[in-house]
Image (cartoon, rainbow, N blue to C red; front, side, top):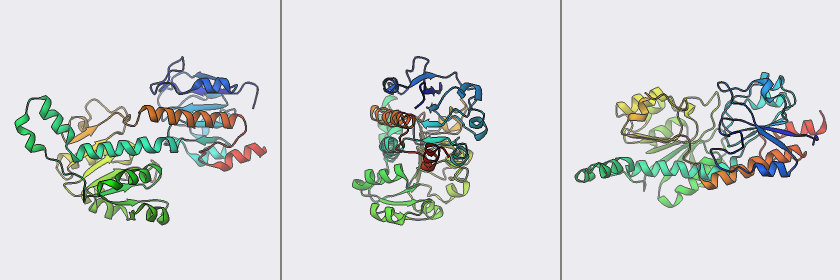
Length: 338
């Protein structure tokens, strides 16, 4: 480790004193490990300037800023991008690997909070929680019979993306008496079989599911995974739940499908863009439940993710392989001095 290993924190979720919207993320552990840290100036748009990050060895990225190859090439001191979370949209792993930059995420810490968020929205939709809340608070008790939910027993839940969070959701659904089908880009039939999940293509998943849960990673190939054709194939009684990334869903197509009653409703913790425009129609629909990309932000989430990301920074700073690198070969190359 260099004598003055410096960590820059992105200002999108952190204040100058190091406090964050997530709460205490354990920055004192960086200090105790001999690392210096400070919150960088706020980024203009979604990308930091090279002269802002040039003086750091590592960047702790709280939000979803872009880190293109040209930026890291112009700031060669930076050797580690540590994401506070599991997503890495805005980061091209192969491009950063070519620049010798280690990218780490916190998939294990995020898995259960995200799966619980998906289940929360699914159950809220199945019981028409928001409709019943509005009826009670507006004094319309006589209307309560109009908001009977569909329930989940015997229904089919389709999970788009059987990765870490999608797999964890399967376990949470197991006691509820549902059938689970899924897509999996890795085609891991052994994992699916162990979970008791049938792997299907997206067409079948759309057509057979009573609840579709979007749990995939956002990449160029998965953008608008849920498009007009997918929505057209869904049952008119089906619900869509998205806790992954807003860009996985064609938002205009979803708006049309909801307006026209081609699907029953949606539960969305993510939108595209974020924050949405004040006149975003999804915010005003009675059959849509929207939360501000924060439903999983529990005390457990903060504790788990903070521990994981801080450990990754300390490990890399001290020449140890971090737990969750996107490409382990990068760390091995620069550790050897290649």
